[in-house]
Length: 235
Image 1 (cartoon, rainbow, N blue to C red):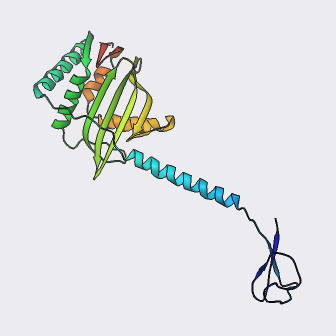
Image 2: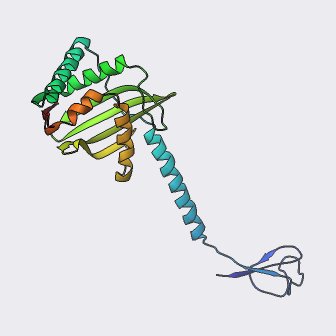
């Protein structure tokens, strides 16, 4: 890199080393300040680009998290929801008597029931440091996955939590194996998925009877818009 010499009298930066300043003619000598010039500050430019990219990624991620997905609203059929609730009560009674229950449930029935429960229990919310007013819950079933999404309000802000995965039954009861999860429109990396799943679990935390039934399920069969479950009242 070239070396420049700054005149101690007038401050002119001389690009060539000499005894006298090219501007004022003063003798520079020992007091002159010498420094290296970097005509291509690549390091500074790269640092600025990296910092800008990080900021864009952070603000972009926040924007995607705060951009909720569409959650279809379910028109509640109260009588149908009550029949479904009685159906669940009958299944639970059968299981308590150490019997076996096999039933096929459609996603439409589940969504109508959840919308009714939400309508009957205003003020439900997601806790754990993120107080929300839960507005909608939607379940979708296909032969390869179950998707669950919850829409909630946090002041004027709308947030959605979604999880996609497969149900499994084992000795420890019902488990939902999640392979994709997102907040808003931001898909989460594997290490962050449990956080979104936990919010969904808290949103549905009041479904105690349903949880007790699921913990007795021994087999799941998924279809188009429906799921077939076999449960046992094992002791």
